[in-house]
Length: 63
Image 1: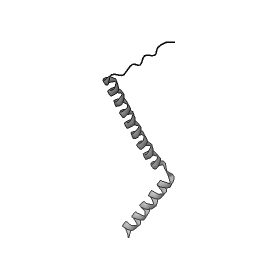
Image 2: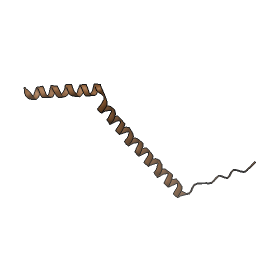
Image 3: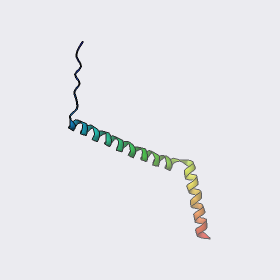
Image 4: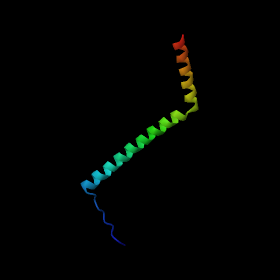
């Protein structure tokens, strides 16, 4: 059997890993928001509702 050595990370390594994890989290949040925006733009029901609201607004403006 070989003895397993446990190597403790240095403070710099921990800080680097935390920075990488925060950057990953931020990137994932931006991706989530972009996907939600894309979904709302391609949502047919949402587009129909927006068109109906626009038509109602145009009707009120013309009155």
